[in-house]
Picture 1 (cartoon, rainbow, N blue to C red):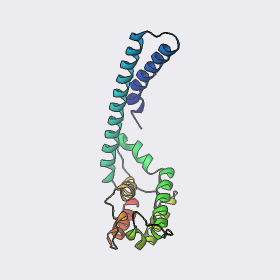
Picture 2: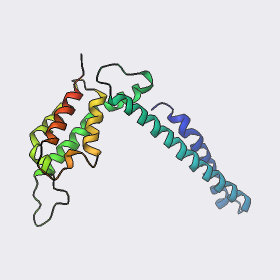
Picture 3: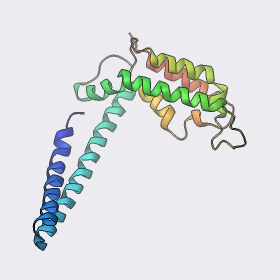
Picture 4: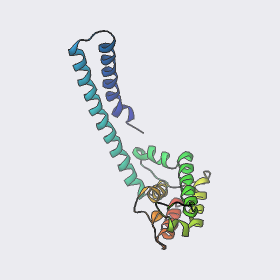
Length: 186
């Protein structure tokens, strides 16, 4: 992720200095201004860390926003890092594994226990879920970042049709649209 060092470096420096001050206070001197300074530097480090993480999150969201609309092969250089991450073999296998787990849980019947979230829609569209997982696992075939973001949305959005408790065709349509979005346009 570009800018990671710039965003987190100053915070790490301040937190390191605060830790050194705290260790010096505990082990050598019990000089009150030293501990107050260490606490102040530590607080400043935490504030910088939070700001840096927020900036990185904004950067990731901006990249995701642009990549959601891109179905071709062109990706601006400022978003290449995110596109590479999304289409990486590791990310593809991770999402395929998650889809397979959802499919398995959609048909398991716990003995004497009530399933907290009945996966009725997932149970109804098991074959399509497995086809989507298989498409992701074929890492030699290219996929689009936009399609990968759709898979992420399908898995992580609470209102996704994947988590529906009703039998409906909405999940089937969402899986079909996701598989189509995964396939790069020529």
